[in-house]
Amino acid sequence: MWLQRLICDPAAGATTATGIGPAVECFLDSITAATTRAGYAETLARLTAVASPAHPVATLAPEHYAAVMDRWNTAAAATWNRHLSALCSFTTWAQRQELLATNPARRLERRKPARRGDRAIPRARLETLFADPAHALRERLLWRLLYDTAARAEEILTLNVEDLDLEFRRARVVSKGGAIEYVHWATPTARLLPRLLTGRTTGPVFLADRRAPASGPRTPAAADIDPTTGRGRLSYPRAEYLFKTASARLDPHRQGWTLHQLRHSALQHLAQAGRTAPELQAKSRHQHLASLGRYVRAGQKQLR
Image (cartoon, rainbow, N blue to C red; front, side):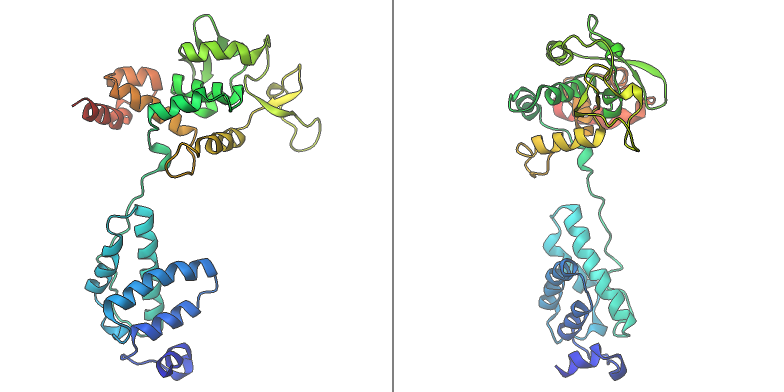
C-alpha cells in the first residue's frame, strides 16, 4: 500500500524500486473508461505474472514484453494489436511518472489485420444464402446480381430499369471512373429479374420499402423515385445492413459479410476455376492487370 500511495500521489514522488504490481494498479485507476480499463487489465495481469509483482518497473526489458505477447502470438492481428496497445499505454504512463527510462516495447510491432471485406465467401454458403426463401426476393436478386456480375455495389444499386437488357442478360452501368460499361449475368439472375420488375419499365431497379418523402432535406432526386409506387431507391447502407444481418448465421464469426465481399468472392471463384488474368479483367473491369494478381495467385494455389 505504501508503494501504491507513493506512485499515485505525485507529491510523494517515485523510486526506481517501485514494483510492477502497485504500478499497474495505479495505472488502471487512472483510466476512466471501464471497457478500456478491463481490456488493459488482462494484458497487465499477464505482465505482472511474467515479471512478478515486486519486480521494479525501472528494470522492465524487451524480453519481459516479448514473454507477455507470446500468449497471443497465434491470435488474430486485431487481438495482438489490442494487447500491444495496452503495454504501450502502460509504458507511456510509467515514463511520465519517471518510473521507466527505456521503452521495453521497442522490438514489438503492430500487425496488419486482414480486411474482412477482402475475404472470399465459400461458394456453398453463398448458394445457401441465395436460395433461402426466408429472404425477400429483392435481397436475393441483389446478392445474386452482385455475384454474377462481380460489379461494385454502387453500380448495381444505381441501376434503372431502362439500363437493363434482359434479352442479352446485361446492364449498362456507370463505372468508378465515370465511364459507361456493361456487366453481364447468368441464368439464376435472369430468372429472378422479371419477378422483381413486375412490368415496371422506368425508375430504380431496387426500391426501398417505403415511399420517398415528398418534402424536406431527405427528399431524393426525381430520378431516384419510382413514378408508379413513389418509393425511393434502395440505399447502400440499408442494403449492406440487410446483407450483413442475413449472412450472420452462415458466417463463422457471426458478424455477417459485406456487399463488397460478393465482388471479391466472384473473382476469387473464377480464378479458382482456371480463368486467366485477362478474363478476370474483362469481368471485373479493373484498369490494371496488376490489381488482379492476388486472385490469380490464389487460383493457381487452389488448382495445384
